[in-house]
Image (cartoon, rainbow, N blue to C red; front, side, top):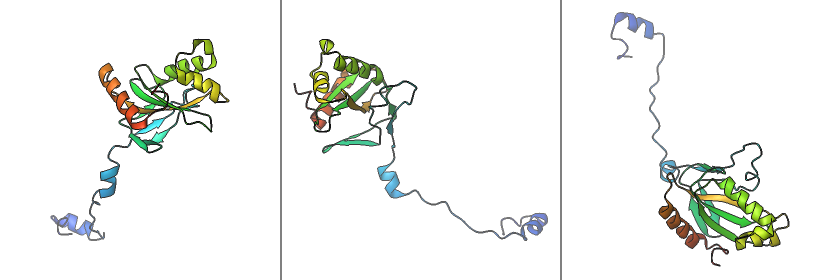
Length: 173
């Protein structure tokens, strides 16, 4: 109360109050070490978005088998300049595919969906596989990495990194 008793008026006023000393809690060491960058992969939730139905949302990291990928920014199914990961939706199958794209993921998924359901237009072996293997002709998909700027060379380098990390079955063909 000494600090507040600088003037006689304040001393009389503050004598009726009881003050406690408090200090700011130091930052949690564990939180600052492990969760400094917390990013999410989420659905866009736009009306009519068919990619939301097959998008795999996750927080901070994606793990498939023993490979782990950490997000570098918040992403959704409309994000562009990305590396994405596709999985055959059949329960008995674990076929996977990785690709880099500059257009938004939902537009690329539309192309996958069309090529999967129209075999005469199928270009990728993965789309042909999903058509024959998955009873509902669907794949599951998520984003592994997002780039802030359009840089084709860097995106190709990152695609090769993730192919080595996850070893997708249909990129080896």
